[in-house]
Image 1 (cartoon, rainbow, N blue to C red):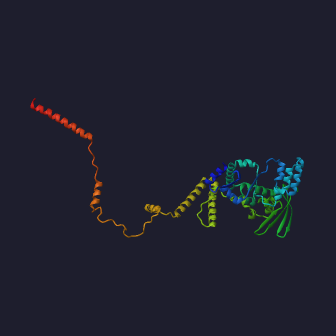
Image 2 (cartoon, rainbow, N blue to C red):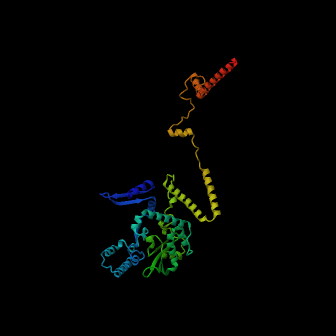
Image 3 (cartoon, one colour):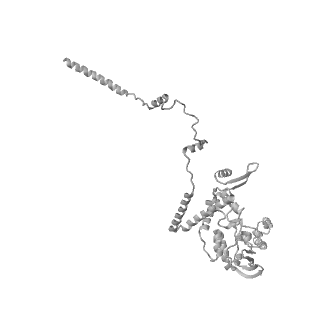
Length: 423
């Protein structure tokens, strides 16, 4: 049933594909499927791991296991306290999981990119059982959030150029994350010490939200065309997002925009195009030119959507834009070279593969002598026969009426004759 359903999808959906495997008893052992949008997402994001971080766990255990803000030593200390508190020190399964902690606990992956890790509070079983419905909901939310990110302006808390730049670059949900980090440079960070080491400045900060003593260190370098910063919390290295501690020296030394090296493409607005403009049938042979043409097409669509979204409440401006776009359309129509339709004879000739010879020579098959319709008696006779009308026979009822009239006339004559004789 599942394979039949995927087979139908492959037949009717563009870029849909699937593969499956079975064992010797024809039982399904593996199944993989992806549509066009999944493939485009994979090209940009790569593998994404989804797991349930809340299933059958209490809040304290979640805070220890799934947090990314503590180091391995702190995790091990907190783990032992929880095991003692809940009497789990003699549980073999938990001991086995703890033994392999370096393979699954985020505290041991602080130096590894973790941006492809997606946490969910819904059970994987439910997600898989309702995959199609879940994907429809997810994609609808993506389109809605994408529209919000592109065509609405968020509130500006800090009134800084860094916050405005983040609003232009990031999706709305990621912007909210960065907005909080920028804001907390004021409310949660305290400068403790600075040391100048050549072109580099070592800044010691106290983060009031951090674990333990909250002391962190930022190495900052601000050259003419190169801004570099690294925080000991390693948030950017893990998730590709800057922390408040890095924004702190940015603001201190007047950095106006987020350096490109610290903008991960996966968090930007334009990482994946809308379904509306995701694919174009561009007739360009060169691959680079094709990509350029697609990018220009997306920019045109984006500009149109932006104008409509921002001018929808201003009818006069909306009409003005509409009229200008009509003028552009008319210019395009006038500039296009449209070939005239071929004559009817030529269209049928192309259809049957015949080409009329281009020559002024007389026909190769002459008309036989003596068969000119003007002089040939045979042809003239046929033509005259065609012109002859069809003789219509008299109505039989008309003949019967003539007979009756003749009989009445005879009787009248007989009567008249007898009267003349006087008899």
